[in-house]
Image (cartoon, helix red, strand yellow):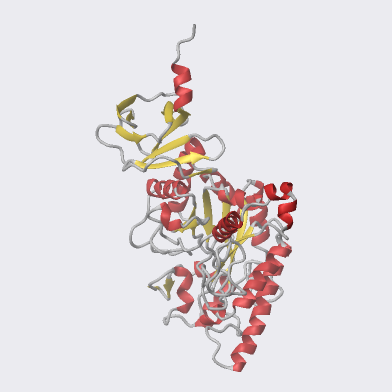
Length: 485
């Protein structure tokens, strides 16, 4: 006999089987959305779905403007070898067929940067508006700017004989700038480095190299405990791409050693040899690092990932090159790239390449000053800002403050009429519009629907203008329009 027939209460609380089936089906579908199933089983792929949500990553997300510094032995020849220019990026000169590696390594006897002044460097970065800096502790040539006990090719074997990194970190931290350390996995000086593992002896040597790498990274995080993150390079060769298990374990080890550490997508490979994105298309790392000297055309290209763009002033010159060939970017071009990146939710990082003596070239000093002058007035459109609800217009970019909710129009292409088209998002109104950093209210003209024009004052502008918009909802506007009795 059916027990439900003897218990009317039970009959009421138990739903029909068809309802149970539909509920189970709905839960399965929702579960599938929240937890997408990997089509390829991986032990060393991405370990997280979506972006990091902790406070350290939120802090990284709000930087807006960063500085990159490439400095090492390559700054001594500065793109020239025996008086002749060598094509390509200056920091790659050791790999040129025109350069004898042993002769290059002998440059260590000339590295004596008597004009190195980390306090002045940090002040220049602060005045530029920099919030974080990435500094090359060791580039592909293997020369270490810190006194590593695991290498015979360090600053201590040079005439300088003093740690470069420690005073750098201290000076930048004093100016409120977070320090991230660049580290090249590839090391041309280390005899155990292999581009490819062809033999058993290659594998044995590379195992030693992996231990050496772990030791040096441990050393850096121990010597410089305020380090906020690590920026990796030289991870594209077959040897490293075949070391997915090790790079996965290394990342987890480093983050355990320094909780909150931020590491981008250049360190790891999965067991299939994929970099940045694993075989299932998921990001391996805390932010996407494919935007080198390029900016995504649309926000869709970012795919929801955290990201930064690293940019050079001339085309593809990172370390000091005495000859800046090709197009050299102006401060207005750089500021436009900065606004473009922030409008798409990314950070923008500008590279500097100090000379062998530790000084900056005049062009870099001037650029830093011009960018800083603009940031001093307009920084709130960049710091802790991101994508807005407005549709992009040809005159420039919109950004939106994550704290105040204000929207900013960063204007680069002013029409001859000085009239800027603005399409206001649905259910919103403009409560005020003024030049950022001033009390000058700008004329607002309604055209039709949600389209308006804002008129900029006439005259020649030397730098991009920024207009601050304060928005209110349609309902708030109606309340304000009601006459008070």
